[in-house]
Amino acid sequence: MFTIQVTHEFCAAHALHILGADEPIHGHNFVTTATIAGQTLDDDGLLCDFHTVQAQLIDICHPFTNQNLNDTPPFDSLNPTAELIAKHIADELAGRLDASLSPHAQVHSVTITEAPNCKATYTRPSN
Image (tube, rainbow, N blue to C red; front, side, top):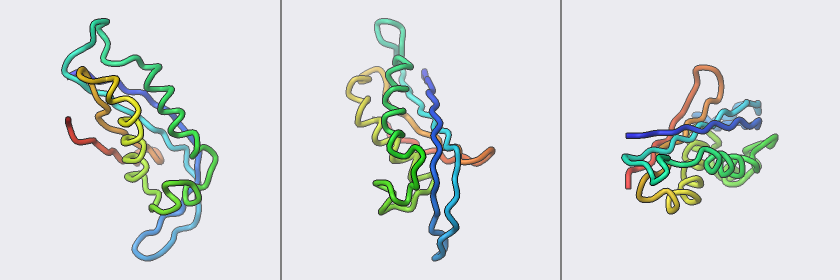
């Protein structure tokens, strides 16, 4: 199995709803790591061009940059946990890239690092 990873960082604030209570709003430098995986390489010996993934990742994260996630779709109606942020970004990235990556690769997972040593990963189901 081959994998590549592309990382993008954005700053945003959120206030989680935990066990019936809202925590105070606070900010993070969210580090987003997208992993593309596949069993074979294309005719150029690539799983995927890093720049293609990077451009899409930046575009997906742009609406969240320097924003309160609680006021920003889809997190205006979802608890903006690192887990749900990772799932949202993975699903968006897959919607943009999986058709062009097929049959060699697919978006495998997205990891959100909210703080040092605090990470959440969403791994997409295999095709």
